[in-house]
Length: 168
Image (tube, rainbow, N blue to C red; front, side):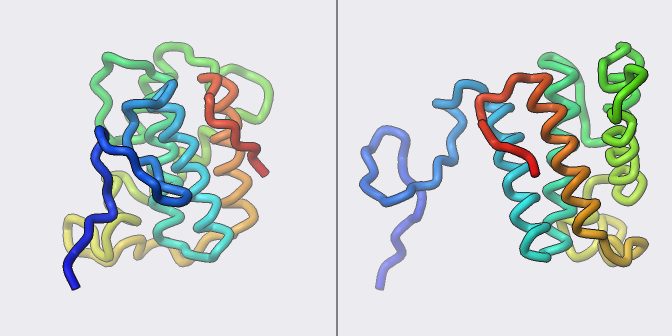
């Protein structure tokens, strides 16, 4: 048996049923498409009870969402706290009084508090060699899903995503 790559080249027609589109070259908006897929992935993992990857994708969803709200041409990094601070300094709508947006901000701050370097759900150990998510026992799947839905729904409304995914 010889190895056959599961990945197709951009300049070749593929006859695969339900092929997974990986490239962002043909997207109406690559950022929106990626945010939608990370949302769908996080929800699927939460629903399936696959905890650590769900945490990682939820944190990635938060990071990509904040970067989309900040807009292009910015130095971003991976620090959710710094990204939130930049949005707050700009007077972003996420920090406007009223509504439940503060719950989204609190959720993102909670993710940041538990994973300030962005390496906790990604690997079995942190970059310092400690067990990943050692300070987090577990997650309430109903609340976790609700906050992931709220984050995605808010960002979807703000950036007008072309990926039509209904939270909830």
